[in-house]
Length: 311
Image (tube, rainbow, N blue to C red; front, side):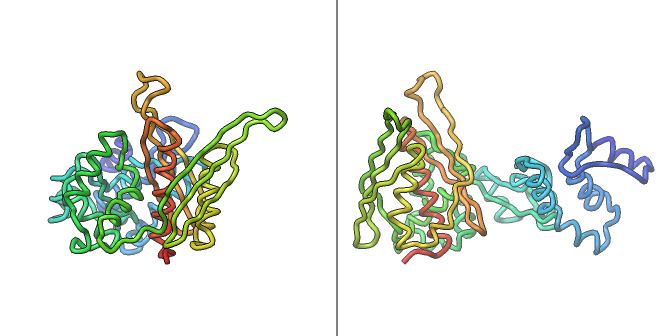
C-alpha cells in the first residue's frame, strides 16, 4: 500500500491491487484502502461520479468477503466495522461536540458509518450516543449513571459489551420507566444424558411469563443450548410470530481465567439475525449453561423489541 501510494506520488499512472487484499501472493495492495486514499487524500479522480461509486465501497468489500467465505476484517481501514468506532469516554465526548476531532473523513464517503462502543472505559457520552441511536431520549431513561455502573460491574464479572451492542441496547431499554419486557424467565432446567441405544440426549424445561400468562414448555435439542432455544421458541412463537424468523448466526465461547480449569468463568457471545439485521449479545458465568442462557435471552428480547413485535 505504501509503495503504491509512493509510486503515484512519483509519477506512476498504473497501480494494481485486489479487493480486501485477497489473492495467492503476499503483498497484494488492498483496493479498499488504495482507492479512498487516492481519491480522498490525494485528489486523484475525485469527480462526482467517482464520489458516487466510492459510497458503495464498504458494501462491495463486505459482499466480496461473503462470496469468498471470509470474515470481514473489523479493523480494516475505511471499510471495517471498527474503522470509525469510538470507545473512550473523553474520546466520545469530543466526538459528540465535533466529529472531525477523531475522524479523518466522513464515514459516509465510503459507505461506512460511525459507531460508539460501550465498555468499562465508557462515560455518559457513550450511553447518550447509544441511546440516541436506539431512538431513546435521555428523558426516557430512568437513571443513566446507574446503567453505566451496571455495565462496569458486569464487565468486572466477565461480560464484554464492546462487541455486544444488543445487550447494551437492552440495558438502556430496561432503564426506561415505561419499558415492559416481552417475557420473563421464571425457571429452567437442562438435562444432558447419554442413553444406551439413543446416544447423546439433551432436554430443556422452561417456565416463562408473557403478560399475565405462564407457559411451561419442554423441548429436545442436539445440545443444551439448542434445547433451551427450542423450548423458549415453543413458548413465545404463538405470541411473537416474528421470533420464527430469528436464526442463530454464530456462537462463541471464551474462557476468561484458564488457570481455574473447568471452574473458569465463561463468556458467551451470540450472533442472531433475521432477514434485515444482525445483532450480538453477551453472557458470562462460571456455569456455561447460564452464560449461554443470558446471551440467548438478551438476543431474543432485543430482536423482539427492535422489530416492534411486542404486544
